[in-house]
Image (cartoon, rainbow, N blue to C red; front, side):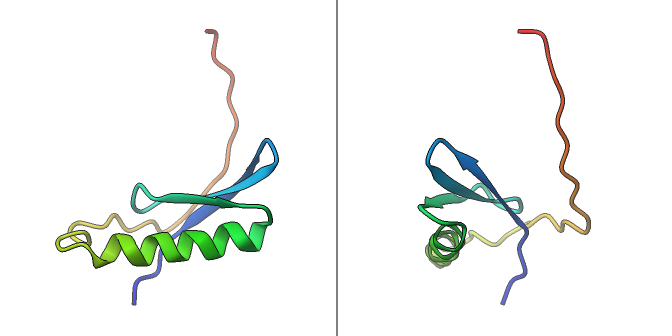
Length: 70
């Protein structure tokens, strides 16, 4: 069993769930559906041989917002 961190945010009319430990994300019509779909995507991801090597350990998460001139 692996413990992974994720975030959920709303993009247009969908909720997007994104894992912070590996580059896997999913979406759904509700927050719970987005999380459930992410769990399914992560299960499939870790079925691939060698997919769990060097997983970064995330001890603390912070959420911020910044502005850049573009």
